Length: 269
Image (cartoon, rainbow, N blue to C red; front, side):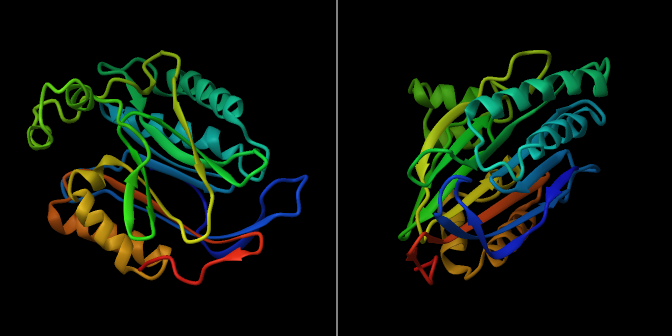
């Protein structure tokens, strides 16, 4: 487990270095080994403008090495309010080289998922959402939960092609098999999505240790009923542990309080 950054409440940040627009955010990141694992192979970074979760995989300590390499590289972007997709791509490519050097020869190889958001250098306040693997980004806004990322997994492919139903996906034997990762000596290929950065928005970034234990309905309920980012993060992790805690679980919850002169006092409804 590797963590980068500190949690914050009502932090005001300059959206871009060449603009006067400020945003006000609260965020809280939390990780737990779970109830059935001996080690925590999840890692996270929370250093504006970038927030991300990585869920490592591989034999012995290989997964931990891989996830640590990714967040260590992404943390180099912290404090730079002009980060674009090219910068993220470069950091992930460097992380692949780091993983190969740090993990050495392993029977199962070493790799990791990564997903997160970054304040985009566009004119209008925007999140740039990125992901590789099956860790996820959700948005909770005005009472509705939306999954922003699409899993890179065997099960997601079967769902997309209509080969299985949502119910069958829940118990599919290949539920843990992903089709894209950072590592394994392959070029990382993230998907990118633009998402408006708006007051009243609550974002959740999480490893699959959360989504294995909580349905979207459950996630929405706890995001809706907890008043702060810290309360939401702690409640989500605790609920996943109480349900079974079969895997490491990591969450980052981000609340957007204000963008320029536009402000909201309440995140939840």
